[in-house]
Length: 245
Image (tube, rainbow, N blue to C red; front, side, top):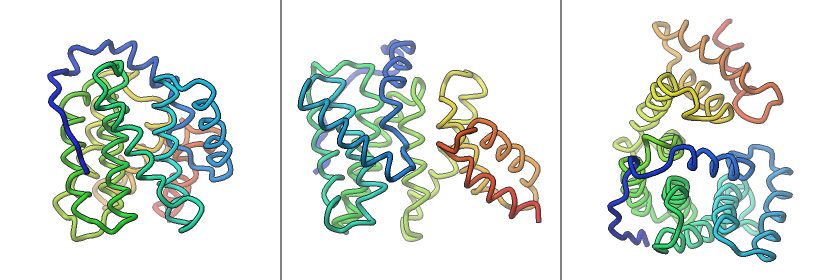
């Protein structure tokens, strides 16, 4: 299932500005939390790809399939079943194509790994989750310095794993802290939406008394970054209210 090929490409060989340009182009299909908006976007992206099946529209298709599997596939066991496999297949085609633009690989490889973990969850083939984490590690090693995507997705997957995946669950804290550290060094490392989610997630992971002040500070940041409730604001407000009691 988790096909791999050898690539010598590293983050140092990528154009950071171009990676950020592609991130902006892909942003509207990533981390969609509104189900109605997601269904509309799914139809829109599929139509775009049918009309113009170019590289960027194919990446957008693979990512929107991932978001559909993540947010709708486990709710409906009929209409949206199989979208994790669709995502993995589309992204694998891009990954195996040596002509794929190298600055798209941080997104292709990380969403491919996450899609494989979703396939494992949907089919209850838990060995695929282990395969997914191997793909995550490869993506992080190669592209983590220029893109938040590999660590953010691995951390998000880790956080939602059952307890018996204890060796993978540790990455939930490791990856979110890493993103914050990199953002502190390079202010444009991650966008407002990702940082809103990241700050909320960090606070959720550190609710012990000794972390309280820092957690509240991060929740305030998560809220401030998300004025229109498109990212972590609602959950950050709820968590802050509970912590302030």
